[in-house]
Image (cartoon, rainbow, N blue to C red; front, side, top):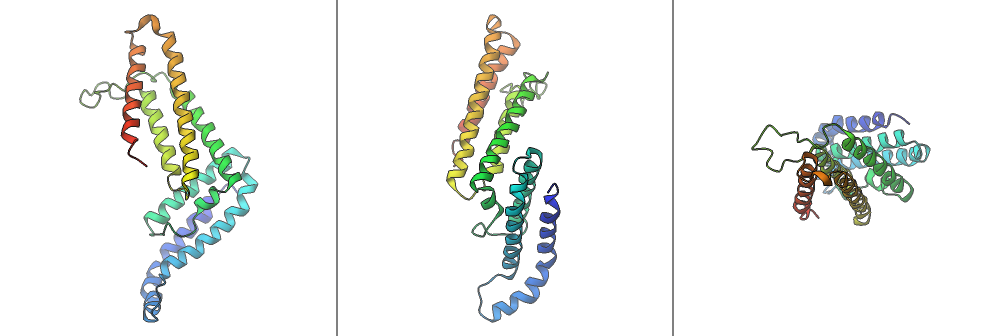
Amino acid sequence: LNKPEWYLTQVLMWIGNHSKFLDDKIQPILDKAGSSVNAGLEFSRALVMLILEKLAADIPCLLYDDTLFCHLVDEVLLFERELYSVHGYLSSFPSCMHILSEESCFQRWLTVEKKFALQKMDSMLSSEAAWISQYKDITDVDEMKVPDCAETFMTLLLVITDRYKNLPTASRKLQFLGLQKELIDDFRIRLTQVMKEETRASLGFRYCAILNAVNYIATVLADWADNV
């Protein structure tokens, strides 16, 4: 259960190792017979169906172990990325995201994603470098003087988007969007709490850093507004 990468990698190897044989030997037979079947894609689809069976059996066993469940989700997302980008798998075919979208598994994924995101936010705001810009010494890069915590937070949101963007239904994606909105509101509250401590020094370093953080986040969110 703690090594899903073993069978996921094995399947990718099988798909890669057989592609030349399927293209050179099997596809011409299908073409000659007037079939519209793509041998390589059908081979991939059959192997993915085995993975779906395996996942359906394994997930109930690790649903309440955060470490194992997170590892499984991470490995499945890496597998899916390679399956589509390297092996040309079709989005209309069955995929692991359908298993991750099933109610009990999906709700667990959301819960765990939120838990680890909040932990990341705790660590980024308690860091000594939280209010310092990574690029403070490079003028042409650092026009907005973005503090490290704001940049890290927006990267966190971007990573979450990247993880859920291939979910098969809009309703599931919207639930993840809801999580992101919760995180933004949580971050806003945290910034407000820090700002209240700084009101006596409104031209102080940290107060200005908070304003820069808010400006940066608002600007990035406006840029993302075109991303459906």
